[in-house]
Image (tube, rainbow, N blue to C red):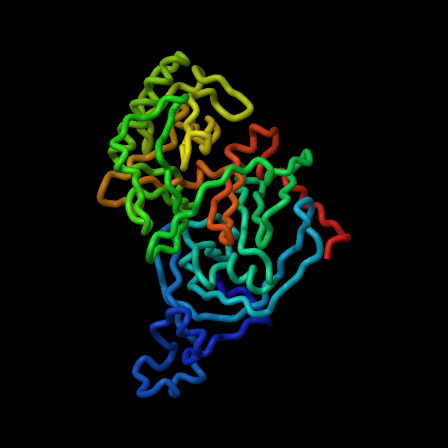
Amino acid sequence: MDCSIPSSTHRSLSCNSPLCSALGSRACAKCFNAHSPDDCSSNPCILTPSNSVTHKSSTGTAIVEALALAVTDGRNPGQVKGFSEFLLSCSKKCLLKGLMKGVAGLAGLGRSNFSLSTQISTSFVSTRTFALCVSGSPSAPGVAFFGSAGPYYFLPQIDLSKTLNYTPLILNPGQPDYFINLTSIKVNGVSIQLNQTILAVDQHGFGGTTKLSTVTPYTTLHSNIYKAFTETFVNESTKLNLTLTNAMEPFNVCYNADEVLDTTVGPMVPTVDLVMNSDDVFWRIFGSNSMVRIARDGVDVWCLGFLDGEIKNMTAMIIIGGHQMENNLLQFDLEQQRLGFSSSVLAYKTSCSNFNFTTSSNLS
């Protein structure tokens, strides 16, 4: 968080406090050469915040701040409730470079005792469940629900919690991220040809896991998976009379926009199914999430929005990126260790920007 923004409610966390140690601090602000912990009693706890988009980091002071959030019944936001013991880290303003204009900080939602979702659940004594619905529009907000397993109503009064399918969340030792296990990928119902061991996950969470990452722009596949996937996608596209055109970086598979029909769920291209623990549990990706439109320099194309992660740089065999999450409701149920996913909410004639943000005075 950019702490140059004035606040009358925050206070620094002492560097010799148990909480500072629990946060993993390695230093104090003014006593790097202190001879005993007591020498740090009046100095702030120092952390190393990072920008997960640009992968840059810096040092910053750990502070305790007040946080206010609107309660909701799943239909409207209600009155604002707050708690005064929210832990966060200050950062230098330059660390926010690379983020959208107006952003004041980053909120961590991973598996941590100090993530935003965990702190909210603990403070309000609510279920350890949160849901994200990321907007596909830069001018219209999406919505996040904390401490609620539903309902989640979106205009025109559709409860998207009833559209969810579920798959287990996998604990990957030492990793704060969220992982699931895909067993196969289908394009227009056709399974891509893979050595099945590449997606196998053992009982300890090791192996061919799939990670969810809002800071990864586009779904990234291990090279062997990417090659088989794009070959199948191109083959299935020919059945829709789509012809490859020149690729546009960073993508490798593109089609002229005037050849691609439009539908309520995006451009008409082959569907992509991420198959989970059984053939009837799959996350269906329609054109709005599988394709990216590029119009520049006299070129107008739709490109397949999946990237080759090569081999050496992958932290998982598949990383599902932010573009594929847009206008999909995702529920992270940490009580039952499962992920709920809706597939594209456009199929229900709504969107993640269609939550009714009109405040209801009846909620408290």
